[in-house]
View (cartoon, rainbow, N blue to C red):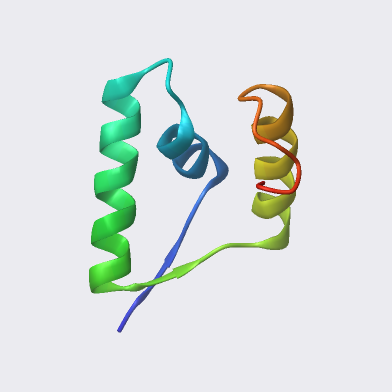
Length: 64
């Protein structure tokens, strides 16, 4: 199975409620990647996701 590197924006779009079209596309992409490849996330992407998720999207720190 091939590996697919995930970027921060895909993860953030999957959680956003302000743009349902981007949310839907991101969730479809994540689902397909999980079914057909091995998703890979770097430490930097996790850090960027945490910062953007907690500040811009209002995700609780423990959830992020």
